[in-house]
Image 1 (tube, rainbow, N blue to C red):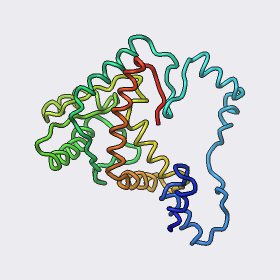
Image 2 (tube, rainbow, N blue to C red):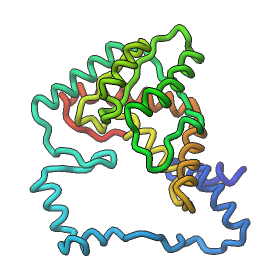
Image 3 (tube, one colour):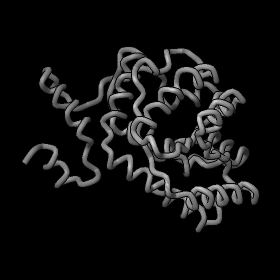
Image 4 (cartoon, rainbow, N blue to C red):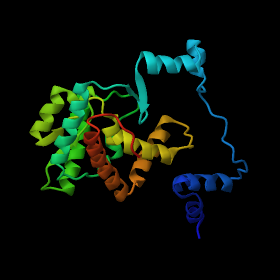
Length: 250
């Protein structure tokens, strides 16, 4: 029985990921003997207390009681949704579920398409460099299938130039209403999976971190993408059942 299989048999879902196991094997092969983490660079969590000269309890009180926010899938969100916000979440979920005939397609952008370090994503970059590559690849994979694009409300995504480009390319745009972090695939699936795969790794440069992120995305098998997509639909139904309230779902 392999080491991975042994860990899975003992710890089940709590077992470390295969990439983590491989990384530690590499560390031991290079002569490492300690299981403790190396000293980390950067400020500890207590730095925020020192910066503002207030206690952790006071910080929590300001966030939760005065600002009325809470953390959900790594984002701070309003603690209470208005009736209109709940209705928007339900209506959006109903709309997507009615059109559930579409399927997800995994497209990995080439290195030439990747954003350079420190470059701001503009509508020009998005419509001239990024989207054409993605749309061309989608049509190569499924030439007869309509393209439905789901993106957030970043300025480069909502710019008139972007909307005009998508119209000309006959790409349908799926609206992305505010206050849906629990219904955003990147928040509850993609970033969470990548975070688990890269957990504990250290990088010597931003470029090295970007390459590791890209490789982690490439390593995600098709069945995991499909599971994430099905989870998206399940979350929409849960949102409808809860009449638009926030929820937590694994």
